[in-house]
Image 1 (cartoon, rainbow, N blue to C red):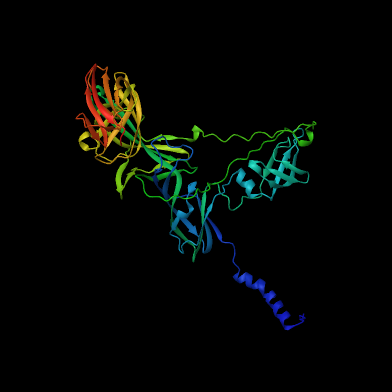
Image 2 (cartoon, one colour):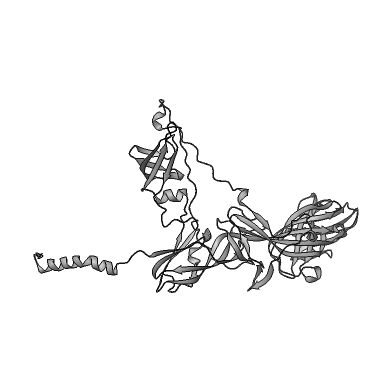
Length: 532
């Protein structure tokens, strides 16, 4: 048939339109192929402590440290453009830190997929879309099938629109089920990182993914068993555990695990959204349908209270100890299968777990960090002088110089120490103490508990108000009700009017160091001034 054209321009446009489908078929861009890597062949986990953290226990809900995670995956790639999905990355992943190597043409685009495959995730993905509803008549057992559209999903609820109007899911009084036509392609049961890339040919490659993630932490937990406390030269059996915590929902099986002691420089970053997903909160109030609720004049029903926030369950927290069961609190009773090996990483200290271990989701793991039996400690009693009269007990302390001569001589990471005394009936708990990061040659000091039989009495003898700087005279009396002498130290952080031979500067603080005889007392008098 001959085509009728009103003008040459019209004929040219018609010819272009007739060729458009052919050109699109030849050059049009199709959707990139989807490639899913569900898991890693091998994992390396390097955990850093929270630089602002304390020696207290790790937060079990969401640890405040971070980790460098490196995964190796074997992936079959198609020819052409594709989207590669790395499933099972850590919940707290920093997507901007992700480095992917091993792809033939490199990476063109990275995307952090934060929505998880879950009841709430499916409802969110199907918002304003149609789902299939099945309702069962309790009396007859007849199942009624119908189509409905999800119109809203406030706070975990589901509002449906069907031929019968608007209803809330599970609020009809009948057993019902909601089915989805398919799982949206952008939903995964695990936290996922997607990258867009190309390959000139179909090939199998080994890809390495490295990234930083929050939600991890570690600390040292010391177990100290004291012997010969009353002698003043105590021996302590010191055992340290490396406690590693993973607060995310992803486990890392057979991971080469390392922890770092020290504080590397890290620039603060904005808080990142964690993967979203979870159960639906389906509640109906009042019971039954709204047309069945009688309306009373002046009665305005109050909405129900919101559901309580989910509490942390101890069932999610698992502590795995690699070694024999600890039946007693001393080093001699412990025989760990393996002990972490210390190395240097620049100015940081690196502790390497010698064998691959599984770091479980929402769990904690312990590996022996150090075993040092028979460490030589000095036992002494200490307190501070305050400008207040009265009597108070001193604190029992243990101190050791971190050198090999005393049985130590290695870097000690920050943590908490539980201290026991070995007695005829077994070890008895004395107290606990924080331990700061200590280098070789520094002093390890453990403040344990109050001693009711070693006390300090502070007495203000006189005040000279004729002097412009108002000079005061004080007497400090140490008493010891024990059957053996004790070493005592009293810090006097004030300005003394004159120097005293018994008061020495210890770390810049005037300190009275003395020995208090058994069932005896010692005193010291000094003048101090308010002038600074």
